[in-house]
Image 1 (cartoon, rainbow, N blue to C red):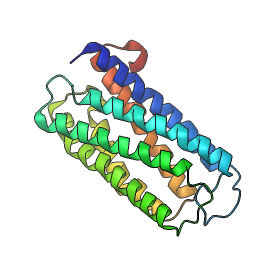
Image 2 (image 1 turned 90 degrees about the vertical axis):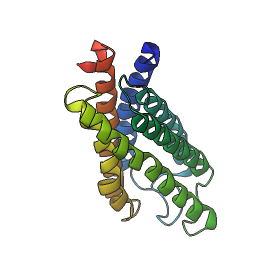
Image 3 (image 1 turned 180 degrees about the vertical axis):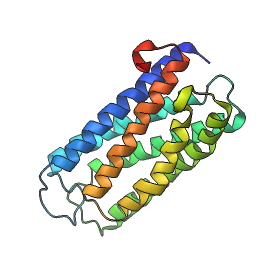
Image 4 (image 1 turned 60 degrees about the horizontal axis):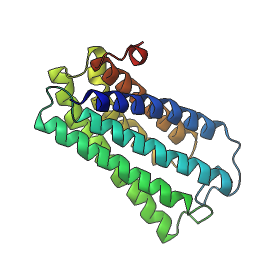
Amino acid sequence: MNPSLRRSASRSLVLTGALSAVVGIFTVAYPPVGDATVWGYPFPPSVHVVVALALVVLHLLKAHGFVGLSQLDGATPVVRWSMLVAALGFVVLAICEGVSASLAGVPLSAPAAVRLNDGYGAGSMLEAIPSVVGGAVIARRRLLQGTGRWSVVMSGAFMIVVVTPALFTGRGALAYLALTAWSMFYLWIGRALGRTSGEASLSR
């Protein structure tokens, strides 16, 4: 694997894990503004746009990180293709966030909002299912070190088993807390990937 790609991918994942957690905590703590039946709640439109654009960047950082995972030493074709498909899922989520920024104030029942929700669902499964499949191989073949070998498979499983059901409850604290917890898996994955390249600053 290209050492520079490994380093940049691990840093991207650590950064997105930490910053996504900050965004999640900010969202949970933000005093709700406006109508819960419109897109952008609990934020006013201006804040929603800033948060959505920040999430565009964070999802693209995850995509970059998973491209790096596809190039792990000893990666099988299943690992390589699973991680690349998961990276595509994060790109889909980034696109959804970009669209989300343009829908502030639109009723949740509007066709555009319904389509966007469907897009989020598709993107989430596009990254979660390959994470489980490829992550299981990473764990079994110990392509990441220590307990970090479980980080990828558990990130996908957490999205499927915990985050998705929480999102069905609506855009409340439970959903945002689940998303915040999910973001921490990427900090774990990034640290594990950093260890494979001897990045002491990421492994401590």
